[in-house]
Length: 253
Image 1 (cartoon, rainbow, N blue to C red):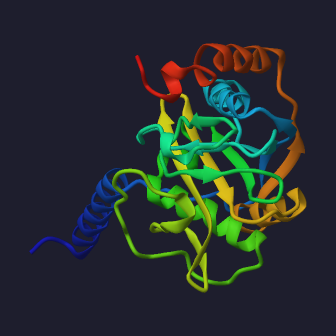
Image 2 (image 1 turned 135 degrees about the vertical axis):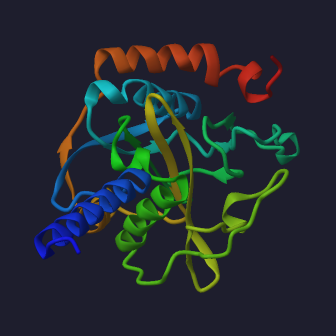
């Protein structure tokens, strides 16, 4: 029989090998355990096409900023946005602009007395980018629920939406719902540039409330941010060449 010291050494080695294999197979996807620096971009009213262009410009430049960004913004007039995968909602008969978002989701009505809109952009490799879409969606919506001072669990029913639908009439898993009413939804776009989350809250809240929810849940430590000259120029170009065109909004090309 092998000496006791040899047997113990072999057992320890086997445990170490098993632990290594488990760590490789299931890498941890965790949010920061301490406060993390975020950029905070507060923007005044802009046209709907420009707002969508800014979000895409921020996604394209996320790697150069190298840290998460929360953008809170407003709209000129009362436009409507709709998800990337939906058909143009021509039957709405609205006088305001109807703009296709770069993310998915349903039809959303915007305006000062209608909703609060925000964007989260994270660089590639950030925890919110590497975790699964549903996990990141829930993490961000927990922050929104905290901002609304709600202790209710996130909506748990998985429902696949098909065709055209109104965003706030159709909650999906991870949405913020209180007493049967959907209060917050969103959609994400992911790629090599990072992650873009476009969110809407069906009530008007102050920027301080929203940032407090992010501090509480995501341990975000905010610093004021302004668009760079590069980001502003790129947003203007995307507005003219993409988001303000029929080719994009009606998918004619």
